[in-house]
Length: 354
Image (cartoon, rainbow, N blue to C red):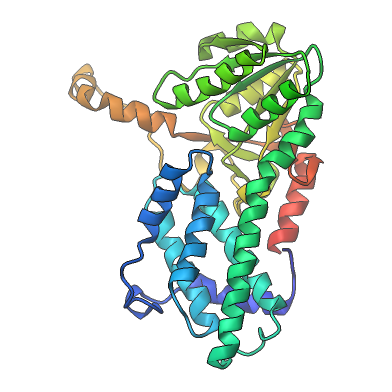
């Protein structure tokens, strides 16, 4: 996927300034809605991640529209990616999917026999479009297989006698622990219950599956994490995004888990698919490209009472909040390619994008 040719630079330039919506190719076919398609995919497949749902939506977009040139194709993808990213409060994970897919499409265009011809004939461009759709579906299929590939690799980290502390909604962590249990490993799990919304029930499905496989699981409150460190031998978490310096963006609370792990000299492993690599280089917690209301300073108790009716919505927003964990707190990251140090992941991301 990675390339550093001048053609890639030229192609990427067309992505930075998409034309206005009225001039987008194929706007006469207004029956396709990228946002509705994205949410439909997430709703119908609970195992689908946000980046993958975004990629699948863009593939359906290419199938639905019929641009006649390479520039129109790239503008179409860029325009609808922007619509998709602007439709959600936290677009970090979604951006990882859309941006990487667009980069992959540029590489696919360069490998197409007719990629040098912007003004290719209708028949030639139909062949190019078919090539893009085929490449896009292949990219999506490989991304879907990444979770199981990671599970096969990371299960080697979970040995007999380990006690794994984990939290969050990571499907990859669940796959790793399932794989280790299926291998007959005898280990224990400490799961931190969020207790805010339906996400807890989803995670309890993982707890239920592990217990059905005769794995001992303790469910604790966030306030009992430090108390549990004496029984913990390792921590394992997922990520919404892996940033350019090898750090991660993940569910709120991951950063403090990482700090506790470092203080107690416990290894922290991050399991994440490579389609979650994102072009960000945050300098700290407050340098993320999203708006969060984690710290809500108020002047009086009256404001707290007035806001009482909105507490449920605030709790749901808190559960969707994320924080940034710097690379120096991470022992290793596991992707479908293998086990890497944070600096090695940074180099891999640079290869992809630059």
